[in-house]
Image 1 (cartoon, rainbow, N blue to C red):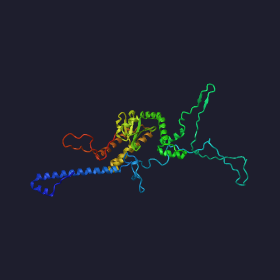
Image 2 (image 1 turned 30 degrees about the vertical axis):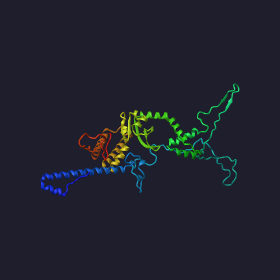
Image 3 (image 1 turned 120 degrees about the vertical axis):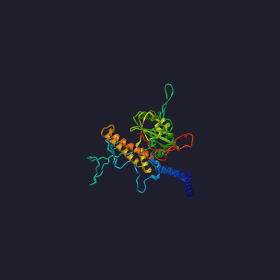
Image 4 (image 1 turned 90 degrees about the horizontal axis):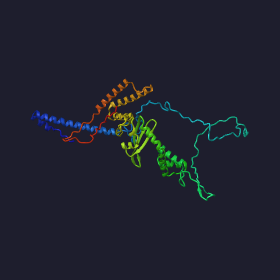
Length: 415
């Protein structure tokens, strides 16, 4: 944007022409100064937005920790900032945690006797001497792992009465001349599905443990068999999730054959369902088959696709709120965001204390005070982050489409 300010010669020329010329010149100067101020503010907003984008990480936004990069690791003895404050929980096992201690069993699989054969004092033989006492120590260990080969042989017999040829039947699971049994296939599925190990690493582990390099085709077929076996249980989990009162949902990206896919998760405190899809939005959520049937309260991170489901109530994740508020406070220098973070944590603590006292909800006067403080802080946030003015149009109807987004943080809450 090129602005032309009056020169000194323009000012000198305006004075002999009277007050009207001077006033016109003054208005031109003010208009130019206003335009320069608006341009400077726009550039400042852009710079602040770029600084905020560079300063965002998993602590101040919803992006995953894997996106932080090496530059976000602690350096020079400085620790990364955490939303969890020190002293909230003691170190070690928490209250109610059930410990597990290795104890001796009354029915060991093997017993090894270590009998003294010679007296340690006089070297006399102790063979045949009566045992007066025993001490026992037990070792819990794995036997050597090795594959055992079972040969299934079908025998043929000729009936002596009619001369008919009869042959035995192989077990249903024995389908090939040489194959791996269910034990190996179950172990392969346990590594790949239970512990999310890549196929090649599973091959290496099985070769190290069993001395056999199981082929990739066998591993993939084991995963397929496992998926078919758990499908009835998966349908039950989906039905229980869809019929619950509270459901937590989220999605995260991962690579499948080098392409970006999305892992969608729906969970309660007892059940969790994962579904993989090439899309992130409603199409993938519909195919998972849980959210279209859900009628309870849906807790999520404000991803717009979740709001497409109108037959349920929506709640927003306060962990994401705290990250975004930290970004507004640290990167945009707005103190109200820190006050809002402290208020949300205070509300959470008060709610937990009320539950411990057997109350189903906070007292109404307490809720009123929290609402008042909440609304006051929101008013400060709205004032610090006004929506951008509409873009003027030189004649004709306004342009269609979404308005240009402000570079400043947008405050959006659901009470």
